[in-house]
Amino acid sequence: MLRPRIAVIGGGTLGLFTAARLAAHADVEVFEADYERTVGREGLVGASPQVAGHRGALEGWASTLGGTSTIWGGQLLPWEPWEFAGGSGRPAWPVPYEEIEAGYRAVAADLGLDATHARVHEHGIAGPYKVPSSGEVTSRYSTWMPRAVRDMSRNRAVARRLKGVTIHRDRAVARVERDGAGFALETVGPDGGRGRSAADAVVVAAGTLGTSRLLTDGLDTPARPRVGQGFMDHLSMRVAEYTVTDWHRFRRYASHAYEGRVRATSKLVTTPALLERTGALPGYAHWEFDISGLDRRRDAPAVAAAVADGLRSHRRPLPQGTRIYLRVDVEQPPDSCRSLHWRTGGKAPRLDLEWSASSRERASAVVIGEAAARHLEDVGIGADLARWIRDDPGTDTFHMMGGATMATDPDQGVVDPWGGVHGVDRAWVVGAAVFPSGGVANPTFTAMALATRTAARIEEALA
Ligand SMILES: Cc1cc2nc3c(=O)[nH]c(=O)nc-3n(C[C@H](O)[C@H](O)[C@H](O)COP(=O)(O)OP(=O)(O)OC[C@H]3O[C@@H](n4cnc5c(N)ncnc54)[C@H](O)[C@@H]3O)c2cc1C
Image (tube, rainbow, N blue to C red):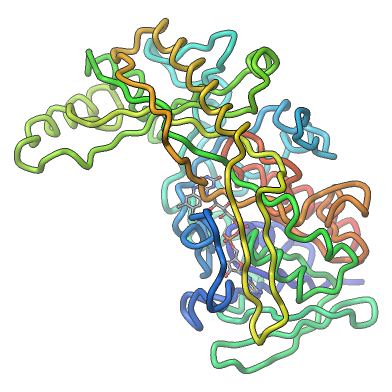
């Protein structure tokens, strides 16, 4: 095959990123449904999706060129080796950590990331107000990409690599069928007009919801009975409120810090020792700042003082009067209390999704909050614990993962360890849908790192 033709289904975060990777070796076409601009969101989720408990399935995605990267925070935190190792009801990943680690470096290069990101991920922030670690919690800092970098439809480094790639801006893929050694794609335009395209290979990059829909009714795979299983997110719960006793000190420890122009946010991540001692699930504690109670007039001097202090200390302004909460995000192992199904009987498919948090996940949030609070007291961050919050119902975090789970055994998952759909030669999936477990940290950096591996595999398979 001279230059294989690859169809990438979904022009979102992972779709554009992966297409850019593949473009050097293949003729790549990207099909983006762009439901927001055409038929509206129900084009993806059906006219009356049954979504119980999960905010993300209703609000936490965008269907347009750039996908959800047009609205996300672009917060990066590479996972640590133990996050892939499984245990305690969390399946292990069938992927060597070194390959993911190499993927993180490749993603940073592809996105044109400042080297500060990697430095902060490895060493934290510089200076005396870096939160230390303890035996129970590890101090880590996530970094945030600026808008022009995090929005995949605007990222210049990605755009350079996408030269030569054909992008169909408003064509949804409805079906993918075998056609000889390759595939025939049935596409739908904004006016409902049908079209057909051919490809030697397909990459499904339709987001966690869109991917499970395509695997349910658009691509004939023997793995279909397992599609939607293992759907998960992170549970996020407010666990405590703090009163600031020393704003100067608290701002320096807790407010987002700037290393050069890179914003960094402090997290206290569980150590394996804490998990072993308590039986808790992994997670991290972080600050939540609520400025909704500030009054524009009354608090104007406090805001001005916070801005001045923020400029001096390279911190994000945190005005006196802000309410301060400790929040904990917990990993959710695959659990029968969560399910993702597509009903395909009617005219249009309809999403049927249930999400909730198990009592073990809630109890873990409390354990992690208590460990973090003990440590913060020892550090002396300029704030005192005011009250524990035991009745927060918790929420998801817009981190939809699973549903097209990766497993070596074709009877256990939907894709193989390289993202190849079990039983369908030359069809691959990229995105957090393939995660067997959800780790602690934000998923997309890891999904991209994994996609670099899938792209290499595709090139090899089509060479
Ligand atoms: C408010 C918010 C903040 C977030 N912040 C972070 C963060 O800081 N860090 C982090 O790691 N993650 C974050 N996330 C999650 C992150 O945005 C997602 O994990 C990521 O964008 C998913 O990428 P994706 O390519 O898999 O899906 P998407 O970016 O959603 O792209 C999927 C694309 O596929 C298209 N599509 C679907 N079906 C079809 C079809 N049949 N044919 C053609 N096209 C189709 C859709 O239109 C869409 O454009 C956040 C999410 C939200 C909502």
